[in-house]
Length: 268
Image (cartoon, rainbow, N blue to C red; front, side, top):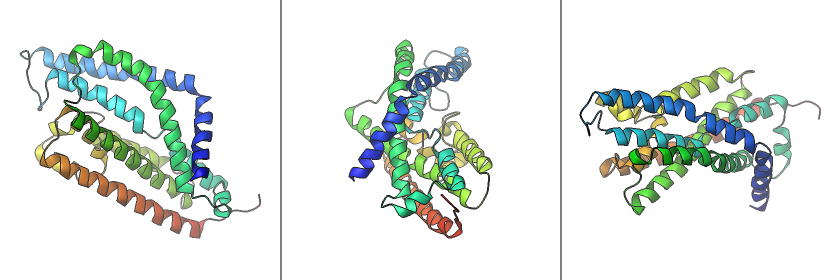
């Protein structure tokens, strides 16, 4: 384990070199969030005070997008998928075939280190934004809900990484994985709850989307925090989230093993 802790340390040092860039990215990332909040305020403006739309009051809807921003900053994959694909294409994975270090574990450590620094930087502008919207912010109702939400965010981070890792492994078979990465991003953006809360969709479509891994990246942990997901739906959601984490991990292992059969490196 010591070698992986060393990788985490190296990842933190490397990421700290770009901390100002992360701070600026997080700050300007609040611009579309502000636009989204203004849009929903305009939608609720013509309705009575305390009106509920799709199961959400205005305060809950604002809190939903604020929490989506927080969870996204903690779990989102930045450049990891591109770097993994580049390692395969350029022969960078060859060194891991000769050393006692698992490549997936190596990349997971770098992902965790990068998320830790980015989250620290991002929470500065996001905290000010939440403070500005504090009158409309609804957080976890009790410590138990908060802990359950944290555990779901942890699983969401693992799922996010394993999905990105699996897509990047397509580089073993194709020269350019950018198309697959963009398709994956589009699916995630639409089906994870990033664009809108999934439970405002028609019930049948909502239930179908819940069977995919994407809602468990954002919608599920945010729904726990807001108290929108509880009881039977809560435990069913945790089972499905854990199922997709394990499934994504197994698929990643299988693709790595099969990809190595096609992998060739010359020179170096």
